Image: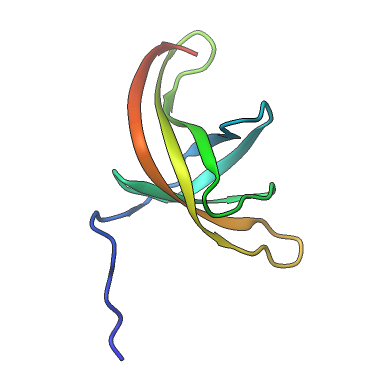
Length: 107
């Protein structure tokens, strides 16, 4: 049986720093994207997430340190897929982006 791609947007293999926070919690989780598109991303995280979880995310596109300019991509997302963690590893998290805004300025 042939595999049929269901995604509507192409994903880029792109490793960028990402900060996640469940919409109703204060704890933030630091991780790195594996791939990214205009409508979603995939990452690995040590914390537990479940399909349907609402997330507030900040993706660091460009960071020149504490004295330089930063470009961040702030988005609201929904967890659509979770791949269980293997032994001593992180779970895979697939997310759909609902809306986003680019933030320019100091860190």
